Length: 236
Image 1 (cartoon, rainbow, N blue to C red):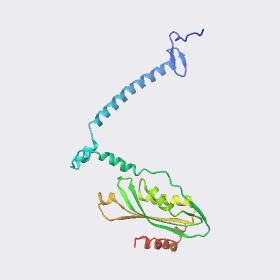
Image 2 (image 1 turned 135 degrees about the vertical axis):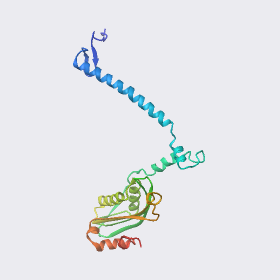
Image 3 (image 1 turned 90 degrees about the horizontal axis):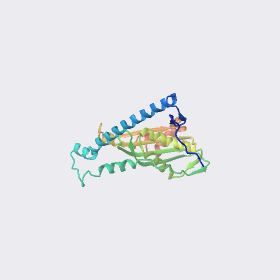
Image 4 (image 1 turned 45 degrees about the vertical axis):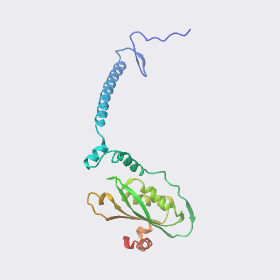
């Protein structure tokens, strides 16, 4: 018959140490830690309850409608918060596309231009829209024609700075193909500079990143600009 486990007289059970005398250093440290955790738990519960109660007093959508002096109701701003969240979700990057590469011996200048895109400014969460012009000089491998627009679309689909978008397109192409050079030009209208702030409607921001032979050879750069109808880097 199995003996029943009973608490040893006068001892306390400390996790990881078993039954120990209550006046030992281990027991005292364990009691102090347990008491501290109980106090913190009660305090955190009170803070959390207070924050929830405070948030419950507010309706961010209604407050925004009041600030803008707009009608709030089922036919007005009632579902605006949900629509705005869905708008943000549309700029969450999807899975990276699969890129088809082909062996090709000749070294050629290959340009895809113009490629429309819509991205989002990471500073103001407002769209910037425009065109990407992408070129590379092959060195044994080329990319399937549809893959460059897919690359631009994938890179564009996230909150970011235009400068970062330009660099990432170039970096992805260099990593995929190991070409002799890549040149990426992005031109876009930023609504954060058109509808707010400086309010310059129609102003384009242009970023240009030449690498390899494009960086080192002015004639190659000019050929790229000509093929993109970007004489000297400006739209013709």
